[in-house]
Length: 88
Image (tube, rainbow, N blue to C red; front, top):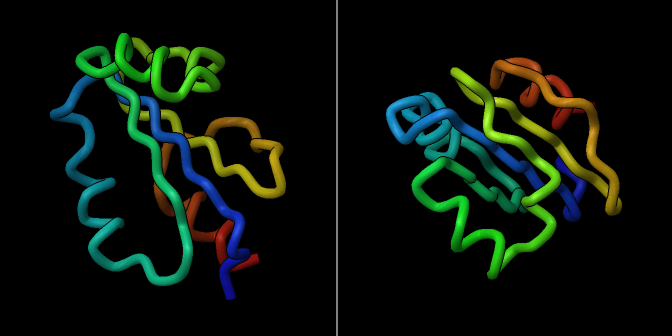
């Protein structure tokens, strides 16, 4: 069962990198908040979600930070790792 206070911060090199995330969101169950940061929305997120400044945009691909209870794990680069962590 998923911790009700789980958040997933996804930092992507570009929008085209997020198709796997969208498929994941279609099948995820439970209470998971997701923030997606890309070069296109980085500026507005600095204003609306200042904590996202701590998550650099990668040169390529996507970095996923799974957060629970106010602390985030080191980034992983694939959703399978995120899914495994959510099931723990």
